Image: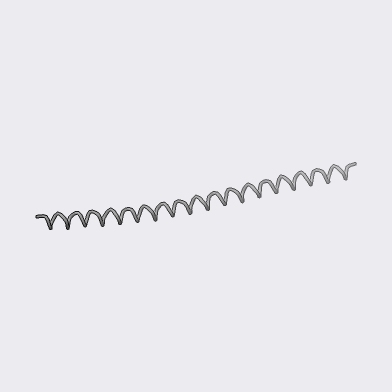
Length: 67
């Protein structure tokens, strides 16, 4: 009976360990995807800033032509 209890306890410990490993993998994936999304957002903001600067430049040129 003692041997059976030891096997059961080892099995519970194994499943607890696997659950922790799965959790850590999921958290790693979430962090990775979050970082990728932030990079894409920063790239989009940089493009937006460049487009805004170009618009302002063109507005200034247009104002010069009208004067």
